[in-house]
Image (cartoon, rainbow, N blue to C red; front, side, top):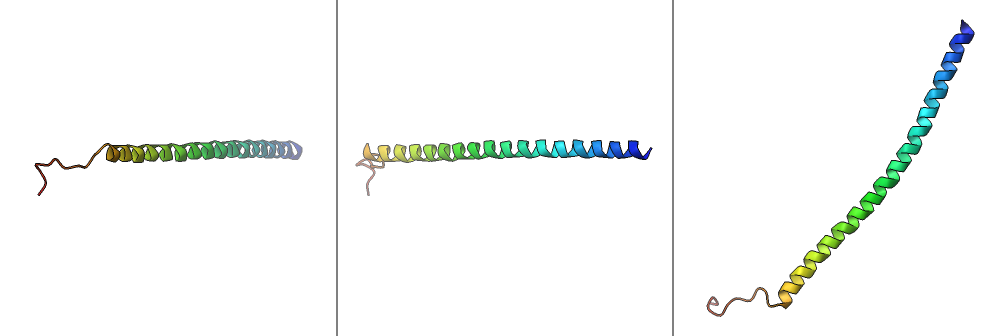
Length: 73
């Protein structure tokens, strides 16, 4: 009985160690993927902000914000 009990405990311990190792590898992979997603999102935000700034500059260069002659005080 003691030998059977000891084998079950060792088997459970081995199972837990295997699960822990798999979870650690999975966690590392998720962290890498999340880092890549964060970097892509950062560049996407920079691209959108740059496009908005360029749109404002283009609007100003085309003569935007000029009041018609009848509205000046």
